[in-house]
Length: 226
Length: 226
Image (tube, rainbow over all chains, first blue to last red):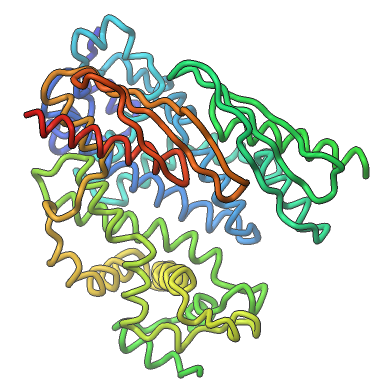
């Protein structure tokens, strides 16, 4: 499974002065105590800073909330895991036998965490300018394809903005019911909106999801009524 | 109320090339469309990165979870607001009349956001090295006084670590009841722990708080039993 990390360095376009840092960034906690977790802590903050600074320059007219949404779309697990797959990062991972058997080398969470650790290792090895170059290189396509209008707002935000725009009071959410076994609970919530004749219900596997569903339904009712 | 910003620059030990950036960092949205919110977005990520990188170097033996807790204690609103008060930042704030009347110049949330915006402005004006110098200068005392052992773990983490250390299965949490009106709901949860004869209950104003209370009670029972 494991390929020589030199290949990965070519893909990253970065050569480590201290190869031990890259090795550590590729080692999952199931394999060794000397694993990537500390580097992931560091890399996560490097990534967030590099992306924030780039978005700030790139979109001088966007408000803070929109910048925050764009950043979230870039640093979330799914985006990181896709970039990691583009680097074939899973082929270089050091996993313990349990994680190996259960396919950990292709799990989004592990791939995303490992890529953050690699960013942390590059920062530690070559400084911020190196980390910035590698991160912006990997993200070049994603950044160029970014369309601020295309990032959909979540339903609760959408509903709140609609109500604010029409000078209506903010909605309130109320849990009606929680049913089911631990780990598979279903939430039923009600969303109270000033402009609607009755509260609107939503359901989901978590409170947040149930509230989003209720907000989406409330928003639809409001906009249908004009 | 408003003092000349030159005084603030002396306190920060930083001179702005572009004084407009500092002005903007000190302007609340209640005062003007040209306010600090974008700079706050930038400054928040600069601060988090600078503090993360410092903690990473300062504590080579600490695990990721502990570094995360230390960082949270340093970048949280209360700590930022204290530092802002040390700079008398409220005296330089530009607020709209509503916020002025309601004492916004001494509100933790506004002081913390403004200080983050000031960090963003310094980064924008003088680059990362300047921002790093100012941030680490302001945080010098807090960093020196930091004692990793003094940051208490939250009860759920404590319980989980205890169970892992004793090779017991992880706890599961189950909502039993949600009662009360919207905005004042009470959650009752049960925590199932392998080592205990019966599930342990907790209550609180939110699910998280109820779970933390249940975890604290479960941890106490476990450690009392030895």
